[in-house]
Length: 132
Image 1: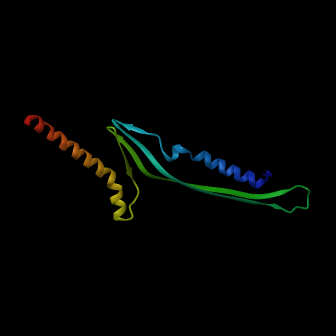
Image 2 (image 1 turned 135 degrees about the horizontal axis):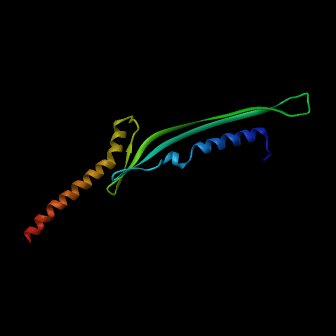
Image 3 (image 1 turned 90 degrees about the vertical axis):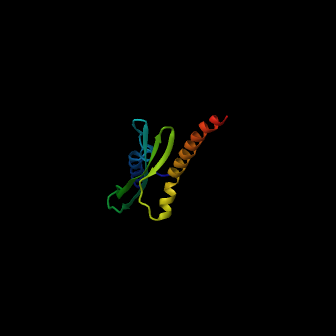
């Protein structure tokens, strides 16, 4: 591909955007408090544009006019929570419907049911031992 001022402009714009956003922007650094670890999760959206033109000149030198720009949006969406060997995701987004809220609550519901079943098994175990 021929190296042109527009190519240089686009490469420069993309490189600067890559420098601003990397994997640690999406999955953040873990934060430890006591026996709980929180890992932030973000949504990253970006766009860019650039363009240019060779301008006619009465002189023998080439004239170029161009511009480039971009934008990045980083939105926190959730936290991965690791606590007592259990991992769950806590969403921070606004829910648009009751179905969204219900789906978001499923992991917590599974955790509570698991705890309830384990508690029930623990309560039944001594009774069975006493009967023997």
